[in-house]
Length: 183
Image (tube, rainbow, N blue to C red; front, side):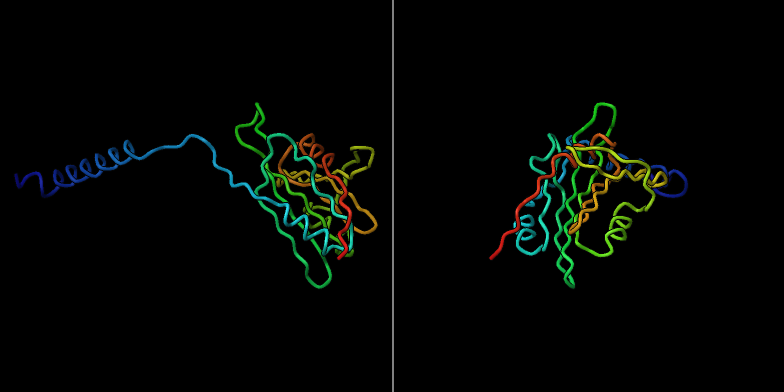
């Protein structure tokens, strides 16, 4: 018996016991094959933006089918009101995972600096018409990031992420201007 508790054989027996324990643990632990994406309700941020922002807010209405809002953050710092809303896009048949898209809006000046920061590039690669308005297309290849930028007189709107152009266009096309709430 001492032969199996010391030296090389002892090492082998200990390893087999450990591996058997791990195997049993993996067999009895429940495994979930469904994705779990946390969903947020951004309606409070929209209402707060409509009160705080000196510009009319552009939330999606309705959100593209199958998209999940995953984050929402409104900031009001030094007279600059900004909102960032993140999404996981719908599953695409050709893609194994969902893409991520962010809608960003701000009255930060200069507007071009905000747009460049959100898009991670200042290089415009083209323009596209969505819902009768022109959006700048920007592409940062090394980060696989596509962006649509709309520079309005009082607000800059950026739709950006790892999603394809048609997905970004779907979100940009769903944006509806909301009237400012005055107290």
